[in-house]
Length: 253
Image (cartoon, rainbow, N blue to C red; front, side, top):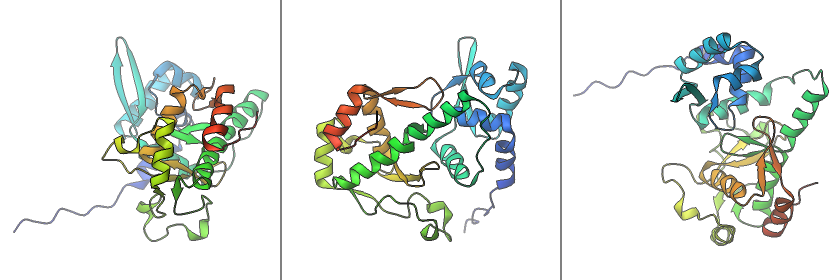
């Protein structure tokens, strides 16, 4: 009879220590849209020298929060996966706000609240608005999109994001096909619909394979585009009209 695998506890303190450093936290947040960035860009966002950034990034790679790849003479870094982004979003729900000391910081904070990415899907007012529109139109069913902390998972934290079962309806599949999103061709190993608790809106925004596919399609249609700051997304004039026409989502100009 084979021995049972050794059951181990997770080293939360080690992961928390990696995130706890302010410079590393800024780098991780900068990588929160899932894109790969060079070390120089991350050093600039963190406000540290290239040498200091290199030390921080080496620790993040060793801790398996970040991966690195070479392109020519440069190294590019990205989050190790959506679970890292989800952990950062969860921490943001309980974290105190950073002090705003300049107009630039105020503008960036406002832009992040309006529309940003959470790894490979939309968040902020745009992301929660998209979730609300999908529910209102019957594309999704199962819950109302409101985050209620008192009802959140307590005894099975690993199921957070999956404890509430949103489902894609048959009519929703047809409506999404008209938008150019074929739910039948989503990656088979990834849940079709999951949710994240949006830290700025305290509502659910859509994640999973469908959230990623919708976000990718909106970029293809040029309804959204990247903003000047990391993770910031802007809705274009074409997108304002398209989102209202296709999904009934009204985006403030």
